[in-house]
Image 1 (cartoon, rainbow, N blue to C red):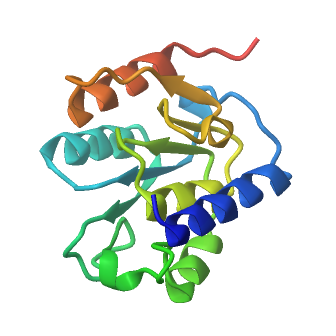
Image 2 (cartoon, rainbow, N blue to C red):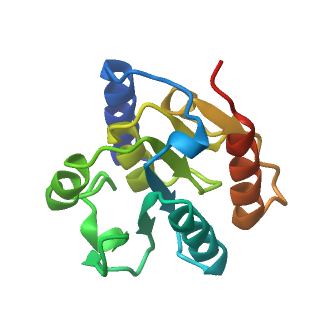
Length: 170
């Protein structure tokens, strides 16, 4: 790990530590707006989005890829890549400004590995509930799934959705 990565990690930890968000467990039928963080927008994620939209939920996807340019394809998909990050590997200010204006009822991180730009967005996300695979920034999540090495992102997606549908408010 180099000095720049250490600085980026410290910045993410500081955001998490200073966060004043009100945490609460969602009841999926009551959730209206969902954020999905991922590395690609493959068929499984598109099918999940279609299911959520059929249930009356508004879904937004922010995807990070090494070659992707920042695009606003629709109001649903936002893609950005390495050229849209700073020297620290964090999203540039115009992405943060665009992202920061939004509020979500639920954030789901479908990545298995640490991806600094997405971890930064997750730390900034204005949401009472954040779910994803267990990673270095455990404080960044309210609900985590232990991701085995052979677990694919699609299997992770299925497990997270399975457990979220089982959560009930008492």
